[in-house]
Image 1: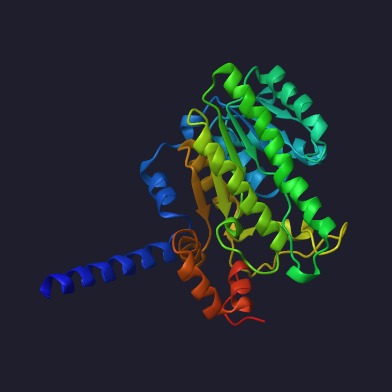
Image 2: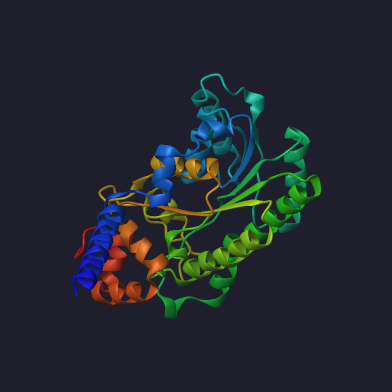
Length: 326
């Protein structure tokens, strides 16, 4: 009887510690420990990293963080003028590690699938190699499940899934052909861990990415694959969100008082994940990390938690607002 009581007490203490740890951290436990004890971002110095969606948000800040540590960069998005601004910021942030010719601006529309190979060849022609591809381009969504038109589902999947998979296959085949220990990263979302309300297509797309890239992790052990899942982050992503109607944008700003992880901190954690080649990492503010942890490892408890909190409160947490907000 005493032994059972002791075991029960230890189990309770274990779960209390887990709750406290994941409630207060701004990343998963592995990434937090790696940020203190793992490989520093400096270990990426001199490597070539190609970032899509690099003109703003997490992509922009990731480029600047990597530049500070002497990482050579290729920056891509549709917005060429913005990319040149990011390039200048990267060179200035590098403190002499990088010169202008160490940062390549490569305008690219991810939806132009037939152009992917040409863009990839330009990167190789310029740098003669590629070490890490960071698939960061994509758009989110705000829409009720039953109102989403099928064309929106297809358009979002074309951008957030199929374009990413196509470019990654080009990179993978290059790594395999050249016998390079390459690294492919994909910016997913915590919606790839937990099905949050009011963005069904986006959630499905992120789950699809997890399916594709977890399979790649299990097929190619000589290629590193990182799936990085940001939680609520302070970027302008809401303005470009898909809705339920083709061609329409959500076009709303993120509220200044929403409790979100800063884009700079998210990018720093992303860079740490790249340096340490983590298979899966996530980042966010409290108490979201606890929900992510439950969603990832205890799906049955996750469903109970979501039912208990209710859709409106889950949506509040997702948007960095207090429980009970209207």
